[in-house]
Amino acid sequence: MKLYLVQHAEALSKADDPDRPLSPKGQHAAADMAVVLKKANITVEEVVHSGKLRAEQTAIALSMAVLPEISPIMMDGLNPNDSTDHLLHGCEIAGGDLMVVGHMPFVARMAARCLTGDEDGLTVAFEPGSVLCLERVEDDWQLNWMRRPD
Image 1 (tube, one colour):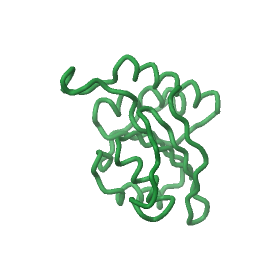
Image 2 (cartoon, helix red, strand yellow):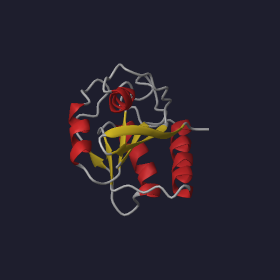
Image 3 (cartoon, one colour):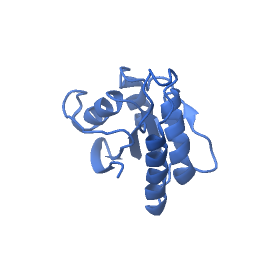
Image 4 (tube, one colour):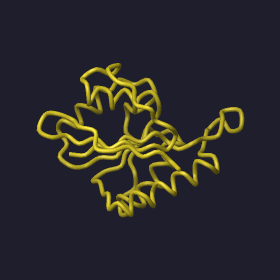
């Protein structure tokens, strides 16, 4: 199983728009990342997001490349300060590749937990719009690659 952890692309500030949609820069970064993923022939069985507008917009842009026939799904437990337990349990029982679009610090804590067993065991330098690919091999997770927006 591959797990793609994505920090949503750059969003407007709360002062500019309380709903915090993607900024024009974030929209371009998400579209550019979708092109990168499509060229790499990356596909997944499901794309999920936190339900926050910026994560949903990023998920929609990326899903056009990795799962164009199915819309991304809102999933509980992906907000910035949520526990990683729910997602980790889901990964343990899932068989197919999954893309998760969420927020800092959640995505970094999830990466650390998969790789070290401890949410604070590693610092992963996500930037808005970054994609990290982890792969579960038997009972262990390994880091395959990470890509940040250009």
